[in-house]
Every structure is written in C-alpha cells, then in structure tokens.
Amino acid sequence: MTAGRVVSAPAARVRAARPAVHRAPGRWAVLAALVVLAVVMLFPFLIVALNAFKSPAEYSSGNPLSLPKGLYLQGVVDFWNRVDFGEKLWNSFLISASVAVAAVVLSILNAYALGIGRVRGRLWVLVVFLVGNTLPQEALAYPLYYLSKQVGLYDSKLSVILIFTVIQAAFGTYLLSSVLGRFPREILEAAALDGAGRWRALWGIVVPISRPTLSVLLIFFFIWTWNEFFLPLIFLISNDNQTVPVAIGVLQGEKMMDATMSSASALLGIVPAVAFFLIFQRTLTRGVTVGAVK
Amino acid sequence: MAPIEARPPRPRGRGGYWPYLIPSALLFLAVIVVPFLMNVATSFTRWSGVGTPTWIGLDNYTKLLRDERFWTSFEHNVALIVAMAVVPTMAGLVLAAALFDYIGRRFGARTASALRAAYYLPQVLPVAIAGVVWGWMLHPSYGAVNEIFGLKVNWLGDPDYALATVMAVMVWFQLGYPVVIFMAGLQRADPALHEAAEIDGASWWRRFWHVTIPQIRPEIYVVLLTCTIAALKVFGPIFVLTRGGPGNATMVPSYFSYLNFFEKVNVGYGSAIATVLALIIVVVTFLFLRVQEREP
Image (cartoon, rainbow over all chains, first blue to last red; front, top):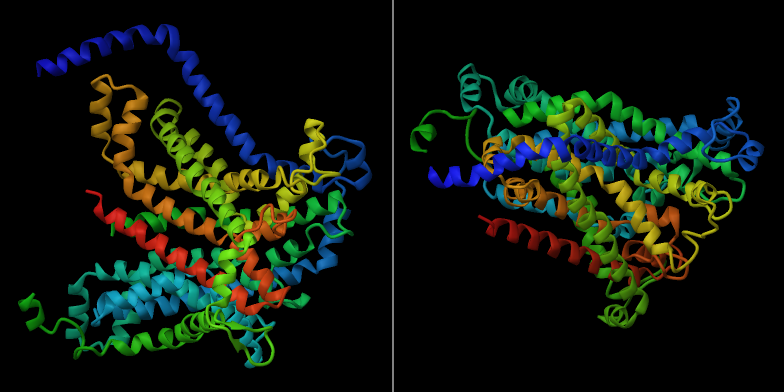
C-alpha cells in the first residue's frame, strides 16, 4: 500500500507537469508519424491509379505525381484486350471458387471424423496434414508436373483445382478439427436419439451450426487460391487457362509494355484484390469473432 | 469419461468415422505424399525430365555443398527472413501498441482502424501483383520513384541495390499482417494490467516491454513462424522483379530450383535443392513449436 503510494506520487507530479509542456504537441507528433507511414504504404496504390489513366505522351512529359489531364482509358483498354483480361478474371474466379468449395467440403468431412468422431490416431493424421500444408510447393512441383502430363491433365484448370483443393483442405482440416472438437455433444446425442445417422447428423446439424466458421474458411480459400502464383505459373501455360496474377506477372517487363500500360496492368491486378478485401471485410471479422466466442 | 461412453454418445458404433477420411486420404496421397517421395527419389538421380533417370546416389547433394550459388541463395533467404519476419514483427509490435493504446484512446477507435487498414492493404494483393506494382515504380527508365526523386538509380538492375530493394518491397508487403494480428491479440489481453502499470508511473516504453509483449507472446510466435516460412518459400516477387538477378544478386532457393527444373532441365539437381528447402522448413517449424511449448 505504502509502496504503491510512494511510487505513484512522483508519477502524479510528472503527469501534472507534462500536459502543459509535452503532451499536446507530442500526441499530434505520434499521430502525424503514423499518418505519414500510412501515406507511404498507400503511395504505390495511389500512383498506379494516377498514371494508369495518362497517355504515354502525358506520362513522359509530366511528373508521375501530377493528376491526369483527362481520363485516358486506352492503356487499360489495350492491356485488357491484349491479354483478354475478362477471360483471365473468369479463369481465376472459376479456379478459386471451385477450390474454395471443394476444400471446404473435404475439410468438413475430415474434421467430422477427427474433431467429432475422434478416430484413433487423429493427432498423427493432423500432423501429416499440417506438414503437407507446410511443405514448399517446389518440393512437389516437378513430380506433379510430370504426373499431370502422364494423365493428360497438364495445362488444364482441373489440375490446379485438384492440387489447391488438397493443399487448402489440409489447412482447413487442422483449423476445423479444433473447432468441431468443441462442438456441443448434447446436440449430437439428441440427434442420435431421434434416429439420425452420422451422415444426416453431419449435414443436418454440424454444418448449419458451424456455418460462420465455414464461410470464413470459404473466403480465405478463395482469396489464397486467387493469389497463388508458383504452381499456376507452371501448370497454366496456354493463354486461355491463365489466371490474373500469372497473366500479369509473365507480361511484366515485356518490350511492348510502355509506362502507362504497365501501370494499367498493375491496376487491373490490384482492383479485384482490393474489391475482395472490401466485400469480405465484414464477413471475415464477424466470422472470426463468432468462431472465437464459440 | 465412463458415463459419457455408457450413453449412446454418437450415432451407432465406434471407428465408423474412418470412411469420412477416405476422399482426402486418396487425394492427399496423389497430390502430396507420392509427389514428395518422387521428388526425394529424383534428387538421387541425374535426369533431364525425359527418359530414364540415372542413379547417382548423393552426388547432387555433394555438388550442392560446393555450389556457391546454392549458398548465396540461402544467404539471401536469411536477408528475406529479416525483411519479411524480423522487421515486420518488430515494427508491427510498436505500431500495434501505438494504435491500440495511444491512437485508439486519444483519437478514437475509428482513427486506429483506418490506419490499420492502410497498413494492411498491401497484404491483400497477390504477391506477384505487388511485384508488378513495384517493378513499374522502380523501372530504370520510366519508373515513378526515380522521376519523383530525380534519381537515376537502377534499383533492381544494379547488383549493389537489388537485394536491398527487394527487401524493402517485402517489408512494405508484409508489414500489415503483424499489425492486424497483434492488434487482435491486444484486444484479447487484459487491460487491467496495463492500467495498473500506468498508475504506477511506468513509462510507455516500459509498459510496452513488460506488459504488452508478454501478453501477446503467442501471437508473436505465430507471426514469426508463418512469416519465416513465407520468406523461405518466396518465389513470386523474385520471379517478377529480378528473376534472381542481376547475376545471382537476388537468387533464392525456390527460384534456383525452378531454374534447374524448367530452364536448365537439371531435374535431379533441382529436386535436391527443393528437398533441402523442404527439410529446412520442416525443421524450422518444429523448432518454433518446441520453443513455444517451453514458454510458461
């Protein structure tokens, strides 16, 4: 008690002295520093957006920081047509959505057996899945490339969908197993007394109740697959199979890309990613909190 | 335990949950286990990708140990661990604490979360696109960075600058992740401890060091582990920004193995590199988990 008072007395004095001298300018300085950092972080986005709408002539005559004089859309349009960007968006969407759905289904089946069924040796199953998810794709790439050629799946969207379904499901299993491990037993027992079999209990009870967690997984899998580069680069070599990051990534630094077209290509890569962020932000936070409370 | 077992706890019978694992087991075998074992097996051979591989035992590995490019590529990996794990974690701690208990309290939660979103935005990009953005900004002839600052630096083409430039880009890309994770951790932490320390007159820095950091230690481990693994695996930015060059200035193991697989058709050698990389990643993961377990 006394000790506490001894310590806090000088503290009170310090604090009483501070506001007059340091505090007010100090707190604005901290805010200013953090705002400057935020501007630095956002700067590349800003500058890409500014210059994607300039003509090559306007870019070379002016400053990258200046506002575009008009809305010059030719760079964006040219790049869009050159890579058939609509098709790339569709490819990315198709692959990411298929992976997300398939990987969530597999994760549910696995987690049902591991988290609720508590099968023997479940810890080892989890370790194997986790190691599989952690392995670098480089250590799988060549055999996958070779095998997919053997079975005629090379350069197909299906090959990429299969591979990423397994990789994402390995992570999903790990996460979902611990969530389902805490699933209220009474509900399952009640269902069993009502004569529901395992299969019906899974789809009729476990899945609807776990929906918040599942939707978070679905969104994460979608975004992670969308962002993948290494394996899609190897597997999707023909133009009409390529995803957005691959199409933009391999064209980087090509001779036909002038300054404004490069910036247009970067912008087209940024827009879907930022759109997902804005669309899913709320679902993600809500889902994560629900999962945490449970 | 016993009374629960006595009641019919789950629908019918025991061990009957195994069938649910079958689809994944088959796919996992085909996509992960078999390819990985094939990769390890190939690493003991000389093979161009066609025809029959020639068994050469450990030759690829002994060659690897003497290959300067291989060692350089791992040195660059260490540099990237600094850029992608160490610096973002340290900066992320300071930023998260500043946003959480300084900005959040004095300027409102909305200011704090707006700043957090700004720091996080690069993270939403596919990492290859982040590379394209910076490849454009740093272009030697028309890049915005040189134009704005009136410089003529070949950021990515000059061996003296290339690695440092890639590191800076990766710090930019990675920074938001620890900030978000640490802020979530701080929300979980008990505010009473912090307030007690403040009442006792502990400076901001001492509260940060003795109260904040111990409270979010689990988050720090998770961030360090996942970012270190990401740094060991890094491929996209290297492919887009420098292709390992100029010379070997930014060569990393993943790109080095890719090069051997698909450009030099030295598949056996590439497999050996990939196997070593996989081994390192598994060992790093294991060590992190061990250290984390030992913590009180």
